Amino acid sequence: MSVVEFRDVSYEIGGRAILAGVSFAVEAGETLVLLGRSGSGKTTALKMTNGMLRPTRGQVFIDGRASSDWDPIRLKRHIGYVIQEVGLFPHFTVADNVGLVPKLENWERPRIVKRVDELLDAVGLPPVQFRLRYPRQLSGGQRQRVGVARALAADPALLLFDEPFGAVDPVTRTELQQQFLALRRDFRKTSIFVTHDVREALRLGSRIALLANGRVDLIAEPHVFRQAQTDEARAFLKVLED
Amino acid sequence: MRSDLANDIVKLTGEHLLLVVSALAVAVLLGVPLGIALTRHPGARRWLLGFANIMQTIPSLALFGFLIPIPFIGGIGKRTVIVALVLYALLPILRNTFVGIMNVDAAVCESAVAMGMTDGQLLRQVQIPLAAQTIMVGIRVATVTTIGTATIAAAIGGGGLGVFIFRGVASVDTAQILAGAVPAALLALAADGGLGWIERKLSPS
Image (cartoon, each protein chain N blue to C red):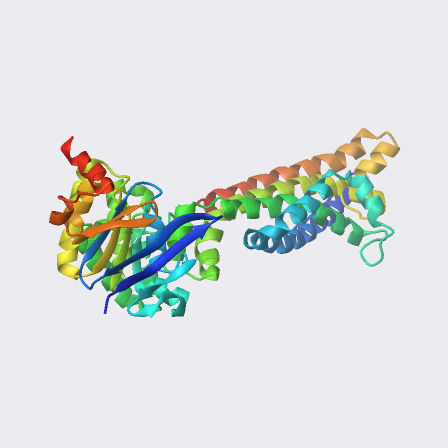
């Protein structure tokens, strides 16, 4: 059973089609990268996975159950989400930000503290030093690490990444990508990762789904994607030549 | 004579404070929940903000005049004054609550929803704490203007520091006018300072 399956999913808003008949599946343990230009519908597809948006046609299945059959709050807490601008709560400490979902799930206090420390260690932020800081006291890269730790907190089976490394400098971005690969090795999570950066897609994806104008142009493993011949794939691969 | 004046100042300042505090308590209890409700119900925005706006444009003496003949809330005395003061104080509180919540960073609200917060949790744990400072600005502005506006209460038998001012104007007695105006100004300054301090305490870390 696939962790996520899109079956002929369309999404229209104000008569404009954002997604048109999109189908794909994400298998346990893999990272599916949704690659595409701005407006290709990749973020919309991501938001449909955890029920922040509902398909106008078709269905999304999570663990074999249609997203419309899930309790919307349960579904969101079941899936970790790392948003583009991080979206850390400025009035919460790092520890409270990371411990958010466990707290919503009424975990016992000592268990939350233990989990938070464990995750801060895992993302390379020593808890003693970072636990009590506020987001404004962190660099962009550190904030992003906290965002990843927060998404992992309640041990979700599936993680969604919405261009998480888009707003940081290239050096930090490379570090964060390496950490992403390390975390994937250690935690064995299934992920969907949205990006417009073809290098990032090739580096992080187990498979790449290329979206163009709300449709799936092709789905391929990175080494196959490098040889792809569709117009959109060639346009993206051309970036690598420069 | 001197001590009579001093006694009067204390008594009328007390009355004045009572008017202001009761009016603000009602305005906060109405304005903050209504402001929150507006963030959830876009349809109600135009007419509710419009109503509060119109209230502010009515000259205060005229508003008292309109209220006097209305049964239950009208008549001569403190109740009418408090109703009028509430209507004035409502707009800044309502508007700042609404604007404060709407201005909370969209990425923060979106991530709260994506983490699986219910609407109530989003409101209590994220939006209200982050809008608290803006809401307090509204309450401070409402308080300072209410302290001034409440001096007109004396015109319809509501008491307060306006009693000195109306008496002084009628008898061309500057000392009497000042006996009302100076304590009112001091009250306004104290409220401004005190609430400004709370406001800074509320700034999100």
